[in-house]
Image (cartoon, rainbow, N blue to C red; front, side, top):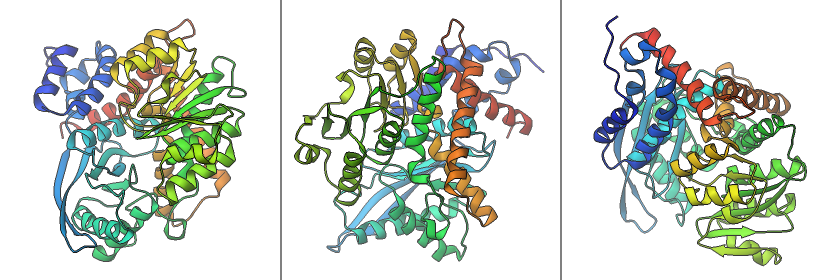
Amino acid sequence: MAVTDHVDLNGFMEGVKKRNPHQPEFVQAVQEVAEDIFEFMEDKEEYHSQQILRRIAEPDRVVSFRVCWEDDAGNIRVQRGWRVQNNNAIGPYKGGIRFHPSVTESVLKFLAFEQTFKNALTGLPMGGGKGGSNFNPKGKSVREIMRFCQSFMTELYRHIGADIDVPAGDIGVGGREIGFMFGQYKRITNNFTGVLTGKGLEWGGSLIRTEATGYGAVYFLENMLATKGENLEGKTAVISGSGNVATHAAEKIVQLGGKVLTLSDSGGFIHDPDGIDQEKIDWVKTHKTHRRGRIEEYVEAFPKATFHAGKTPWGVPCDVALPCATQNELLGEDAKMLVANGCRAVSEGANMPTDLDGVHTFKHARILYAPGKASNAGGVAVSGLEMSQNSERRSWKEEELQQMLKDIMSGIHNSCIRYGDQGGGYIDYVKGANIAGFKKVADAMLAFGVV
């Protein structure tokens, strides 16, 4: 095989930026992975000559389409939809659908790129994809959301399938939206097949799927602490977000003896020095999910808490932190505050919630820091198990699924140690996750030839 001229990291990233102008989130995600992969590939000529990282950083396809729908007042509305199918070297494309006004092609490309490595880490046969729309479900009636979901699926259905691409939910897409989309898929194709995950239990869904991402992030946090002979008993936790991932992460921390101090939404964060116990978590779940309320109203129900408008919770002293809201919510200065205040461990429940400055700060401080592609893989892991259940026309019991989730998170943790152990008791979980995920996908790509 001919030896190629190796481009260095800076040269590689210049090419990524040139090919993806005005896509900062995607460039950031590639940079975070490439920083570790280039060192790993240094003496592995085949990865260089076959341009493996270059190929992973170029989606297989990006499908963009118009979504027309009618609001309750009879006005015709137009949104844009996407499906990014990044890589299917180890299985069908798998990744959520996000409905939020912040959705752009760059955001979905970064999510699909991250998903490729995350899915590889689970050990399940799933490739990486992501989709969504700049549609905002907030303030819309149920019938408006139904009409939008049906219109979205009328285009998307031709690009997905149980052995092609299996979407799930994400921000703005829960069980209700999955139901509307699955109903439309079934109507169009006359197929009842496992083409979506996150379905209702009555029609092919899996137990613990709702809890899986938040629980998994805490299980990973437990595994990290165990390497230091510690656990969550008596530890204080700062959590961002107040949706599905955040509330279930809080729930599991409380179950394991920890004390949760904060939750947040786009308006700011609440700080409850008495701790957010299960009763309060249940209140947040009902308030946010069913009443579509704001987190600031928590202080009306629990007056000892305080609300901090327009701020994030990273200045509150804590033992552990779990960013569970959205990308780039924890910046370099926030990371420095957490470290200065004695934070011992960070487990990401969201996708790329920490910017590159923050990542470098945590790594330099040598704290326990788990990137989302490792620590929040529990959700897609149970989605993968839902796919298996759909294929077998069966369902597993909750205790079986809980054990599988724990085993998968433990397996991911072990993979991170294998490739991230730096000696002296320090494990670089970012490096470990990036290399472990890359190697699995890369080796499959090498087996297929240039395709």
